[in-house]
Amino acid sequence: MLEVHDLSKRFGGLQAVGNVSFSVTQGAIKALIGPNGAGKTTLFNLISGVMSPDSGAVRFCNAEINGLQPYQVAAKGMSRTFQHIRLFTHMTALENVMIGRHMHGRAGFLAGMLNLPWTSKEEKRLRERALEIMAFLGIADFADTEATSLAYGQQRILEIGRALACEPKLLLLDEPAAGLNMRETAEMAKLITRIRDTGVTILLVEHDMSLVMKISDEIVVLSYGQKIAEDRPLAIQKNTEVIRVYLGEDE
Amino acid sequence: MRFRYTPVAVFGIGVIAVQLLTVIADKTQFMTQLTMTGYYSLVIIGLCLLMGYAGQISLGHAGFFAIGGYVSAFLTTYDLTPYKGNSVVMFLSKTGMIAAAQDLYGGDSLVLHPWVAFIAAISITIVIAYVIGGPVLKLKGHYLAMATLGFGTIVYKIVLGTGFFGAADGLSDIPGFRILPGLEVSGKIGLRVQNYYIAWGLVVLGMLLLTNLIHSRVGRALRSIHSAEDAANAMGINTTSYKLKIFVLSAVFAAMGGVFLTHYNGGIGPSEASIMKSVRYVAIVAIGGMANLWGALCMGIILNFLSLRGYFGSYDDAIFGAILIVIMLFAPEGLLRREVFQSIKLRFSSGKISGDKEA
Image 1 (cartoon, chains in turn cyan, orange):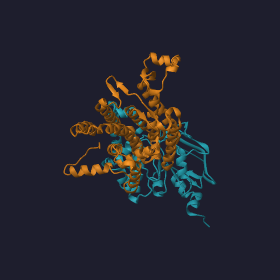
Image 2 (cartoon, chains in turn blue, red):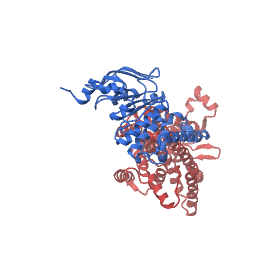
Image 3 (cartoon, chains in turn orange, brown):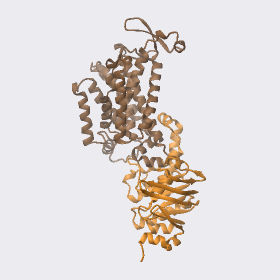
């Protein structure tokens, strides 16, 4: 579904991502891990179109997507969340999710200004589907609450809801458990599995090993921009190179 | 949905009430400034959408106002008699797009029909807004403010320095704009009431269109761009295109105000393009509460009317400068914020729980 080929990105003298290749198969949960500064978020930004790579290619559903703008990548069926929550302020939780459904409507400036009859039907449809998604995530009760006044954990879930509203084939989650406590992290793990079970493929960046080891089908380990391992969770836990990177040189 | 049109209707009634009041209070001389205020209000509400909802500042809106006004003024006064033989002019006169007029000394002249001039003025504004907006809207914050300021300065200097735009004198003796038979935008004393209603009718129509827009899918997208542009883009919103379109739309509102006010006043001068005019529009939107169309409209009406009546004397520009400082220091989100209205509404409706989503 997603193939990353020899992807490289350099910031000045720093090789943030160097010749990284991996692929994500449909229906899988794949995790990207690595110490701070390993290039995980840069890799995410390269895949989702926020940055363009210096070399290498990203193929998604058999089409090359590097060089596309983020909104074009989203239109191809890939949506994402952000490491630092980027919800829309001064908007309700429902409106946030409805922005996720933006692509599924077509009312433009003229139709909006004239309030053409079909636009209110379209709005109703967007609203109903957004509410369904919120119900699926268990946050429907907060629909009319201002998004940024929700509890932190709920904001994380709302951001996932907003991304799910795009109806992506592939969902990129950038540290979904960051800032969550142990109970919330366990719930997040269940939630991600449930989302996968609806047929959405998932690629996530995460620091929380309990989450990663529990739900991932495969793990890619990055260190200093290089891929050092790619395997199933159990094998990764035993990989000497990974242990060395995480725990330091062992004498 | 239910309540969306209520404010517009109340506003429409208010417009009629003010007109009746001027008759009752025998203050019909206020009518002129009230009409002019209406045309400035078009600029204000367009700019409010751009600044308050989409979060993009423009310090060049007086430029668009002047482009509208000057293009229309020029085309409706430029004598085409010497070009009578030209095939384009012949085509225009055959299709009725050229009207015979009289010049200053009673001589005959051929000028473009105001409707043609109006369409030309709006089209030129759209083209310029696209050309300027494309590169400039990639900038953010201070940089966008500076770039639009640069645009405003260019327009000001062009109209001030160009001979056929009348240089420092501006253009005068602009004919009235007959929109429909019996409906004419002009400063003739007998048409005062009619012109008041034309101006405010346009404002009511503009408010209707813009309130619809902010409650639509596009309005929601614009607010999301204001709040977190990168996230909006990641959700599939073509942010560049939306910012450009709203910029062009608000430029068109400004140019409309310019065209109509020029025909109403019978002239336009370079001061309409000056930076202080742009600053004034931004100050009014800021004090009105940024993301609050009605607040911006209210403040626009009050301040423009007071200014046009000369209450601020020669300190006119200083007053608007001061407003900007005070607002930025003490109420950067504006005086008439939505939250203020909501808290007032809550206080009055305590007891019943209001579940209306349409504010």
